[in-house]
Image 1 (cartoon, rainbow, N blue to C red):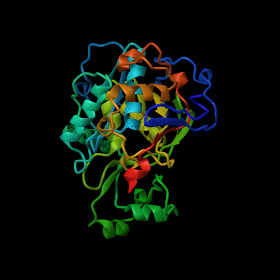
Image 2 (image 1 turned 30 degrees about the vertical axis):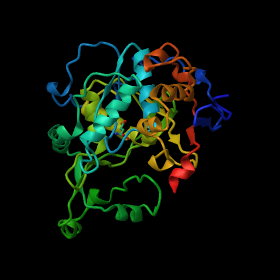
Image 3 (image 1 turned 60 degrees about the vertical axis):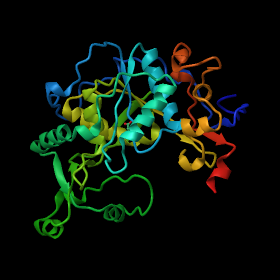
Image 4 (image 1 turned 45 degrees about the vertical axis):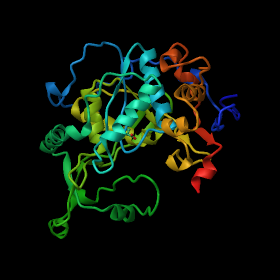
Length: 364
Ligand code: GLU
């Protein structure tokens, strides 16, 4: 059983679906309506889209999905699985998937990585229009949006270090922190003390909790804090860029790893402020290594190139990925062969655990 049991396969890559809450009830997710998920009214004042040119001219009337990798290294099978789901979801809805390069982090991104990532998508048959959106080329657009928010008195400078935030919320460890609003109300003298530090820019919010109607994760409450719009090194922040670009690319559906579910409320809040519609969200469970940690390079052969070196070709990887998302896929040669069978309701709701028999040896 793909969902509750251990799947063994003749390949040196085997998958094992952890039980999780054991539920795969497709009925709970129902049919996906592309119209219904859009909201129009909201508690915050909507603002017209930034400018007409900010929206892609596009002929295609079908749904638009997207895959938005950061080119900081090669894609591993976990990333490819998410891309496959995004592509199949768009295609099975009569649409297409666009690819956007999220290279805000200039220090760790490279064109070479981008090319490798695109080659990996191509090897699985995840075709798409040529890439036109690279975040590194769009800083001016993001800054215009920040300036617009600033004019609306929705932006303030933040001088806090990560450590200070941790101390303020009394959480020395842990992944993500909600900003406690320290710099929102600095007195003149507090400001003077901090003025020589570089400032990040944060969005002023009243900390709403937004409901994400996620078609995979189910309805999820997401707290919006005063999140960063521009980092203290001047680089526009992820949540801002993603919202601007999803609107620019007319993205109707966002399929991505569920590590980003916690930030989705922030993105929805910003969409409302900027007058953008909210896409359909499908946050898919992460892919884990045999040790239960998020799949990463240290787990061994996790990229198509690594696997090819071990004699495992892209077609084989595609079939393994197909099975991991609840499809049969045994005869698939390319992703298009999976479109008819694809059903998001069959996606197991528990993380996919990848077992590589060589993992231990390559860890040394
Ligand atoms: N660029 C992000 C990543 O590679 C994904 C962002 C998104 O899908 O919204 O993790």
